[in-house]
Image (cartoon, rainbow, N blue to C red):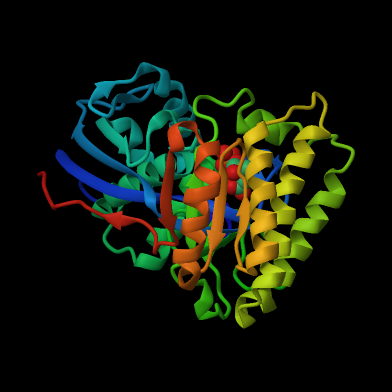
Length: 366
Ligand code: PMV
C-alpha cells in the first residue's frame, strides 16, 4: 500500500456529537529505529515487543462546528487537568494527518488522556499516547464511512500514529510488530507496522519486561533531535545495514526460540543505539552510572545462573530486563535482591508482552 491509499474520498453525513475511547500500550524495540528520512520514514526497519501494563487511555468527545475552521479546535486534558505544553505536539500531529482525515477541521475535540505509568518516570509516553489518539480518530472515521474492515482500520491507525511518533506505529497490535521495508519480510512497509508474519516460538509468549526506573524526569536530548543527528553521522550507513541484517537473523531465532542468539542481538542493538548517540556531533550520553551497574550485574548473574535474561534500553537511562515467563521467579528474585537499589526509590514496573490496543468506546452520540 502507498500513502495515497490512506486518503479518504467522501464521508456520508457527519455525526453531530460522539465519544470514542481507546487504550493503547507502549512498546520496546528489539531492533531499534534510530534515524529517519522525510515524512517519518524510518532509515532502517525495526521490530518490537508490544507491552501490556504501560499504556495510555484516551477519550475524545467531539461536537460538530458550524463551519470548517482554519486551525484545529481542541482542548487537551492530561490526568484531568488542562495541559497547554502538550498542545504544540498535537497541533503538529493534526497538521501532518489533516489530508488523511478531512473531518479534523469540522469538529471541536475534548481529548482526555492518562497514562498507567508515572509521567516523570522517564518512560516515553509518545508511542502509547500517539497510538491511542490515532485509534480514537480512526474510530471516528469508521463511523463516517460506510465500510471499513479491521485490517484497514489497524493499518491506517498505525500509519497515522507513525506521523505522530515513529515508534507509535508499532503499538496498535501485538505481541511482536515489525515496521519498515525489509527485503525478505513480506508485507513490510515504511508507512505502518505489521504483526510479525512468521513463526514465533512459544518461549516468547508472555515474555517478561521488568522496567527499572533509573532516572526520572525529562531527557536532555529529545528523540527527534537524536534521529536528526543520524544525518551525516560517520557510522550511519553501517548501522542501518546492521538493522536490516539483525532483522534477517531474527527469523530463525524467533522460529526456533534460540534465546542465546536472541540475547546477543537484543543487547547489541541496545548498545549500538547508545553508541550512535555517543558518536554523533554533538555527542551525548543518556545512560547513567546505575545503568552500567545494572548491565554488569545482569551479565554476572547470567554467567553464574545460566538464566536467559538480558537487557535492552531505549533513548534514556532506564533498563528493560527481558526474560521468559518460565524463569520469572528466579530472575525477579535476582532483580529484587541485586538491581532495585540502583533504581530511584526502588521504582520499577513489571510488564510483559501484550496483544495490542483495546477499544473502550461505548456507542454514544448523535
Ligand atoms: O518514536 P520516536 O521518534 O520517539 O523514536 C523512538 C526511538 C527508540 O525508542 C530509541 C527506538 C525504537 O525503535 O523504539
